[in-house]
Structures are given as C-alpha cells and as structure tokens.
Image 1 (cartoon, helix red, strand yellow):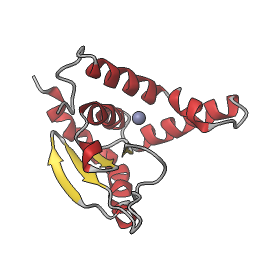
Image 2: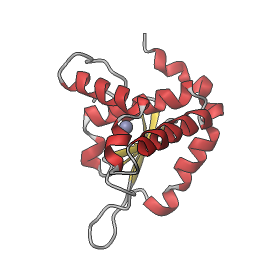
Image 3: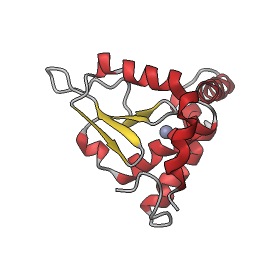
Length: 152
Ligand SMILES: [Zn+2]
C-alpha cells in the first residue's frame, strides 16, 4: 500500500511551510515545476554566470512539507536525493509543519551551541531529521529500501 498518498490530509497544517517554500520562487526563479510522486518538485534557476540561485550548497531543500527545491534537473533525477528530501516532507507532515520547523532549527542551534559555534556542518548532520534522512537515503542507495518514497 502506498500509504504516503494519504498524508496530504495533514497538509493544511503545513500551510506556513508551503507558503514560505513557494515564496522562495521569487528568489530561486524556478525553471521547471512538476507534481511528482506526492510532492511539488521545483528546479531552481541560475544566475548569468551559471551558478544556481538556491541558497547555500544543498542539492535539494525541503522545509518540511510537500514542496521540494532541487539545485538542478540533474539533482532532481537522483533517487537518493529525492528519497532524502521526502523524509523531511514526512517529518514536516507528522510534525504539523511549523512545529517541525521549530524543532529542526532548535535542534540545530542546540548542537551548534554544544560545538561552541564551530563549523555548522557537523551540527547540521546531528539534527534528528538529518540523521534519519541520511540513513534512509543510504539504505536506498545500497538497495535496502527499493520502494522508498521518492524512488526514481
Ligand atoms: Zn536533509
């Protein structure tokens, strides 16, 4: 059973996350958009020098709802990345959107303070949602989860 198809029933709680994700379109200037496998998949545009408009260095970004931004179409077509972002989509739906966002950011800040405001990446990798997403995308890559949500 494709149980995640029914998670849209929780979507009204993620409305703030969805609105912020869609407002990012003003900055990211999407080059493509499609509804695919339960998520709106958007590809960020590029500046004149060819660099992508997506902030930071992520291959993809999901603010805890069913809107996923990808750095490029090449990134969008990576199954493990789509699976990773859909873990955040699920967490956002379970966590009722804003609660997820506050918990995610709060956990990051807690870990970063523990590190004495050192490099941010180790703190980011210890966020509970990231630990689960990286574990699941790895299990997908090595063939342990062939039917993970987001599978290409
Ligand atoms: Zn992640």
